[in-house]
Image (cartoon, rainbow, N blue to C red; front, top):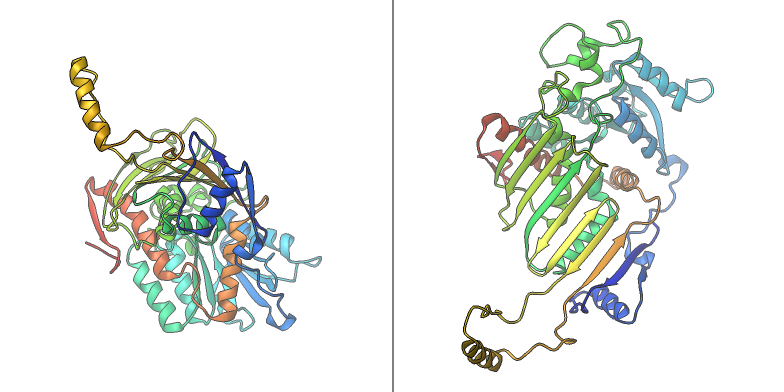
Length: 465
């Protein structure tokens, strides 16, 4: 893995030292005028050794839409992984899978509408599930019971009953199940976790997270192919346990717009923000949630909002505010702001910035409305108790910036972690319990919005309270 960079940009005053070696080192070098510090590769997890030919993992893709195809492109770049089969309900995607991965003859992979045909194949070791949300539970359970390890795209659940069923199946089958929120494997988020635990910003009291976009493309507005029809699309299979209605090409290809098949922006994007929050803080989840939102711009027949705001109380003593806005009038923006008693920590894309401002050592005063004589008398007594600060020794703060190497991919690391778990049988970085706690917290937003009320959740037992 490539090294990590740290930039120290002095503010008005030097920063007091932290209790971690890296912060002591960075503060010293910052004082010496060093702008960039290169952290050695030894500080990061080393890449696994090359795999032997007979240690190859054969992978099947179930759900070959945009996310599924994108995930697969990343997954097969991990050494020792080969795609051997694809299942999807649209014939055009199966044909394109052969174009992408079938080799010159197109026959190096097999394709099918029925994912269950793949489960009898002993040569398939693991599956990547990127179906609509309402199929996650059934496909994951079927695959695990057939002896396959599972990479399950987020959100892990569509409804709350899905969570316990998936967790229990992973336990009883002894299968690896990793949920696909890749930020849990990010070196940027790992550094944030380390710094927060080291006291970089003091006691955490608030987190503000956001994901703003100004386009529906890639969020739910997917182009409907010209040949979409009941003949090219397996509509009954797509519907599964959803209400039975006549063929609708828009629902088939833009399923995220409806609760019957998806989880709205809460399941699409809030879940990423919850995964990041829980990974960095070590929390199991919130206990109380309140959300508001509406369809403000994209009036296209949907029944899920395009603007969603949520507030969440955590038992560790901090609050989380989340925002997803698809009408932001600007460029896409994603990130976190962690606010603590001694400073702030911000994640924006692949960068991490820590700004540290220790609390004042004296209470301060407001005496300008008093008589001049009273001001002098007060200041004499005040300075006898609180000596005037040294402009150098008592100065405040620096800003430290971390950035992932150019071209870094947390999705690659997430797949690498998954395949390492498949080989070693060690639990993955985002197992079914973690995935349920992230998705369960995210879907509290939908529940609060539907009920127009505060809702409660027990993050330990993973049950609505």
